[in-house]
Image 1 (cartoon, rainbow, N blue to C red):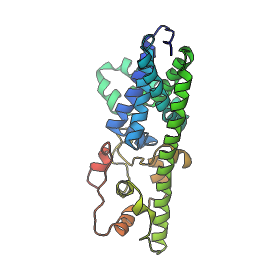
Image 2: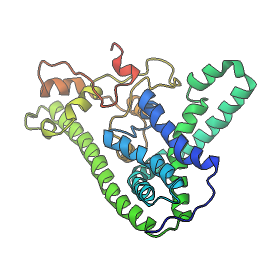
Image 3: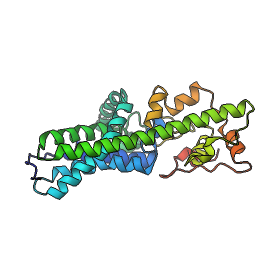
Image 4: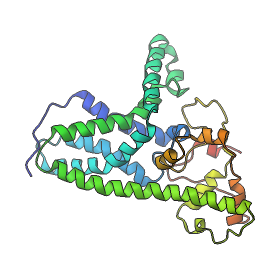
Length: 293
């Protein structure tokens, strides 16, 4: 396999293709902000690794003109990262426009009141350019990935990207369908409990991670402070983008306010009698989940 023909790499290639997607991952990991406003983009560590694969692939392909090994690794990373990132872009949907407006308004506030930069950047995600850029990160990363694939027409790039893309797409589908199935099983089991049926044979008891998910849902989701805080203040999504789309893009706070929040703690107690729900997430909990109920 020959090396890719080179083309000039500009600073904005790194900004859009590497820095912004990584910024999305880091901000969401630390604040759960996207989980509170829309959906959890990294329900599992696999989600996080696939999200990270895209900017890594963009970076490697940008420096791979004369190194075949780096180029192949970069291609594989792009193929692994694109399916999930494209799915996240689809799920964010119209909120991309809201992010652009937030970025514009937040930038104006920074220019007009530079001494209040901390409040603008970290106090309110409705005006925070940091939060806005996090929502735009997946779109920027996917755009640069497509640009790299189009420009670097070296031998083998499309084959490697296509093969890893198809494999990753099936894996993402499996993860998202499994998460949605857990959501349906929890709902079905709760309805059976309310109807007075025996739930001892519920498939929830056999489902991996079901106990942790139900423990998080057992918290009576409510907004503890301003909904504009940069960090998620509750409730947060625990199921991912596919479930978010299947629910008609209804965010966690919308679900809380527009539907009757089930007594998940009652279901938890019925499945694991006498045990207190202990919320757990592989990447830690949001502030509202660790606060006193």
